[in-house]
Length: 226
Image 1 (cartoon, helix red, strand yellow):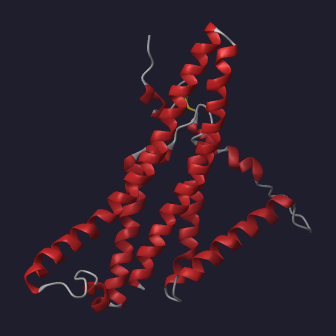
Image 2 (cartoon, rainbow, N blue to C red):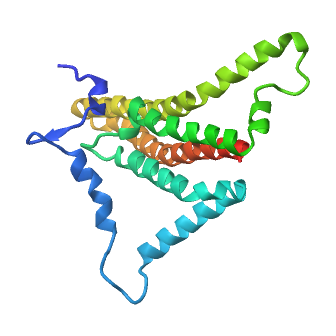
Image 3 (cartoon, rainbow, N blue to C red):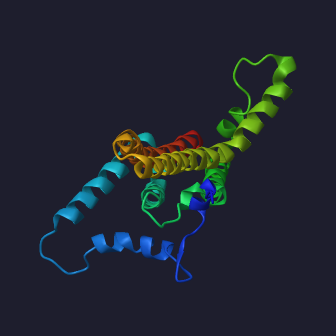
């Protein structure tokens, strides 16, 4: 019986209990709540990572936009952890669900647009008409720019969903081919196993890059409106 490749995006269960709950608890093992006089290596690395992220965000934003750094850093870490947890076995990749990604993209995009309309409405409306547009084409240019503005959150959600889904489907197909070749001939399975290892490493990089790209686009939208 052939397994549906899209079954991997359903929440797996163990004794009628979703295993995603156990996978979400895995990062808590890295957190130590014991009071210590000196910081350990884990807390030092986490603080260095947070400082680096906040510094890079602050360099691209104005003073009013820097108020968003904390929520954007939380968003980056949330998407990053969700992408990495999705690579573990018996887990559900939450960022492979379009509804999940759109629930993140639409409110943040709307917040940047509302911020621009409140702080500098003239400059925000000026983006709707490129400078030097011919007079007969002004209504069409405004319509095109309006559609482009509305499509931004859809592009954010679809980009993240498509990249995560495509990578997991490739891993599923190659792992199925690896299991099939192992049953036939162990030597022949070396090539698909090597390809599966390289693809897994690539997906680790994609998980980090897609989280960064999602937040970077929000920063660019915010930069236009602050």
